[in-house]
Each structure stands twice: as C-alpha cells, then as structure tokens.
Image (tube, rainbow, N blue to C red; front, side, top):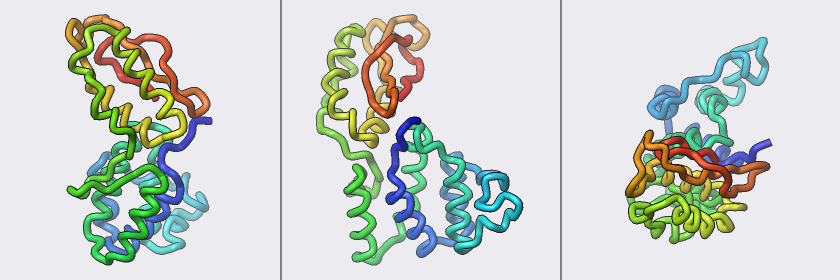
Length: 205
C-alpha cells in the first residue's frame, strides 16, 4: 500500500483552521477552485445517512467531504491539496494559533514561505538541479541519483520532485520526441530510478 504524502496531523490541523476561520461556502470553494468536488454520499461516515458528513459540525463536515475525494498517495492530488491549505491559512491572524499550525507543518516536512505559499521542505539541491543544461538521459539519471537517498523517507520531497520533473526538458529532447528519460517509481513507499519514459510524459511517483 502506497504511503500517504501528507500526514494525518497536518490534515487535522487544517481542518480546525477551516472550522475556525471560514464559512461553509468558502471552505467548499477553496477545494473546488483546486479541482476537488465533494465525495459522494456513499463515502459518508454512515452511508445510509448522508447528513452524517456534518455530525462534527457543518464546516468540519464540508472539509471532510471534500478531503475524502483526495488521493493522499498521489503527488498531483497532494500538490493541489497544498493549494487548498494555502487558501485556508490566509486569514489566520491569531499569532499563537498560527504558530501552532506552522509547527505541525514544519514537523511533517512543510513550510509557509514569506509570501504565504505552502511548500514541501526539501534539500536545497532541488533548486540547484540543472535540468535545463542536461544533454542526455544518463546525465539526468546521475542528478536524480543525488536526490534519491534524500527522498527515500521524505514524502513531501517526493511531491516537490514530482512537480519539478513534470516540466523538465533538455536539449535534444522534447515532448513526443521519443528521447528516453529515467522514471521515478516508488514501490512500497520508496523512490528509485527505474525504467524509461519519453520526454514530456508524466513522471510517476
């Protein structure tokens, strides 16, 4: 079973942010703006009673119903979910409460930047990976090897790396060109470099 990329404690904290600082409609809009529709009633805590979504309160229920449609093992879903969390954090002005939330984020590999963006925290070398200067798949694999060990036990880094590589290209290769690139795979929650894909294809984590 694939590992979830955002810890449950993080989701629980943002659920409390949503219930304390937002209305039902703005919670729903934050998710829907990132492409997440509410889960169907068959996924409610008690499927025979759709209103059971709201047992802990309508705002928490709205958060839960939308969060239930997120695949927390999928890097693309998680990247969009972090966009939701960014939005939910924006109005929090209580310094003590915000510090508590940010401490939980930090503990689980996430950080809020000076501009208020929520990002996976990873090694600085991610920013230094010279994808634009790589001339062949062998060179790319060499650089990916540098990241592999750091990402083995760091799911947020996996999200960051997945996003970076999706836009990657290099001289001599372009989408549909058939040039090979290494594929990142994560069996049993671990990452390594294995196999090949064409430039422009989705890198799977």
